[in-house]
Image (cartoon, rainbow, N blue to C red; front, side):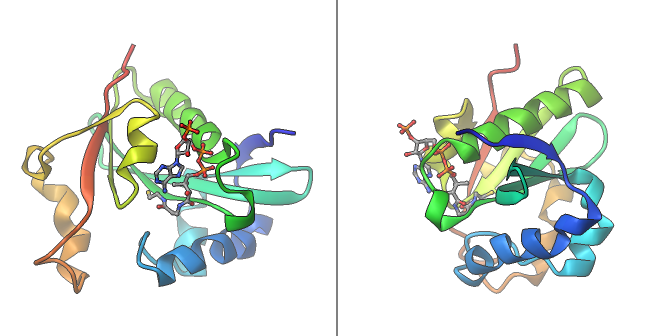
Length: 155
Ligand SMILES: CC(C)(COP(=O)(O)OP(=O)(O)OC[C@H]1O[C@@H](n2cnc3c(N)ncnc32)[C@H](O)[C@@H]1OP(=O)(O)O)[C@@H](O)C(=O)NCCC(=O)NCCS
């Protein structure tokens, strides 16, 4: 059965942290502390089967039309069953409701998943400089393997 996607609530913070942590340790996504999650909770959505949460997604709003997909993760035990795509589709429709023509981008080590969901690869330099602020703290900043993609299916 597919989960419902809903806004995160304060009671989800520990579970969101728990789902993100293994992937942050593998350096597939940025580490998020519980405080950090709490402060940006309004931007988090979860995939829930009743009380069980199987996945999470978030975004960062750079203002204007620019929105970044962040902290997308599905429990390993539930991978490849469509939950990541459901979360991403839900986020995109929420971002479109916020802003008529959002420019939605992602920096990721999983480009194939995003391409299957309507994103296209773009040269990193085409994204505005303000998005690189987090990179200053990254040990891989001089040898970054992340791919930049933007959501193209803006119909
Ligand atoms: C990326 C991730 C969220 C995908 O979630 P998921 O629920 O497994 O994805 P879906 O089941 O919706 O997959 C949709 C398609 O993408 C493919 N896919 C999923 N994860 C993939 C990956 N890491 N690499 C390549 N293809 C992937 C699936 O096989 C599926 O293809 P199909 O339609 O041809 O069968 C999940 O693998 C994950 O949590 N990865 C670790 C964290 C991460 O990399 N997050 C993204 C960075 S922002």
